[in-house]
Length: 182
Image (cartoon, rainbow, N blue to C red; front, side, top):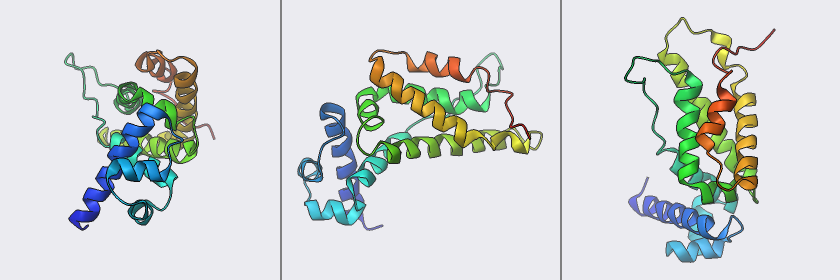
């Protein structure tokens, strides 16, 4: 990709995160373009819509989420712990942004980005456990993760200071051995 396009996209994403975090998800394309120092046309050419700007901003933030590694005591966390607890911690770190985008206009596009990130992480975490992992284990992941993201979004809106890491940990505690029933 052309460096100029990369810089424009990065500036728009950064501006969107900053504006949404401080003012809510109803910021417009003109505001985002002005904050990024680019034209409104450049934003549309690079993203197509405000929803795509928010999705790209979310994907950019999610790319920073670290994978959890085994505890020093040799305890191996479940794929759910490896993927979802760092995402919960990440959402806490960007609480204002996620509170706005997971409950405002365009929330479905953003929720899908979070779900896609988590489902991909779960698939990768299971693959690292080797061939002994039940191949059916991931069949319901998308369904379960969508539900968890919805509950987390509701919690962000209703309980401003909720400890999302503890909340997600309690929600996923029973998921370690779940496989779909046939």
